[in-house]
Length: 177
Image 1 (tube, rainbow, N blue to C red):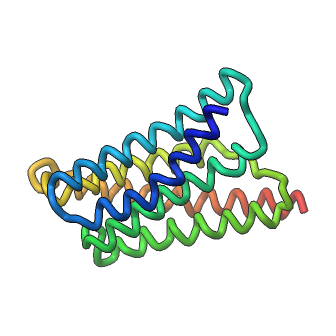
Image 2 (spheres, rainbow, N blue to C red; image 1 turned 60 degrees about the vertical axis):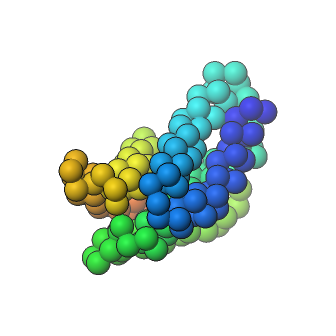
Image 3 (cartoon, one colour; image 1 turned 180 degrees about the vertical axis):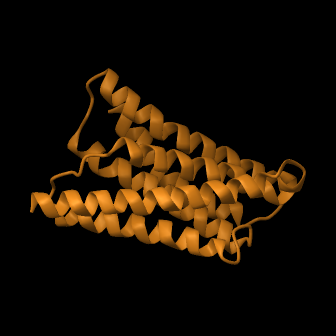
């Protein structure tokens, strides 16, 4: 039960993150960063709790990837909107969002057979979240610590991982059907 509650909280945090990050002042950026970090941590925590206490559920298996996709997509949209991710880097954000929607559709195509999350997909999600954690505050402290550079580099790494894992899921889906 607790893992599903954490997942649902992550879903609700996504639009709140967009609203908070639309205010481009230091306090709201710190709040947005806090929301994103806590929400990202719940991704690890809900899976850990579900496995540790044998609380896995079909609902959780469906909602968990949706929550991740919503959180990452909303954060990327906010970063593009705030011009933190700009120029050619918008392509990376767009490819990630397109991949997330495509994989959701592929899961639907699988008719309820949940595609197994690969280790590489977990690394992809971690890279996305680390990129966003670097990029959110980069507007205020990025130049001194190269946060924007590291965030954009991680964004491109996660884009490549996104495309690779999408290929793996398509391949697995085609073999099974």
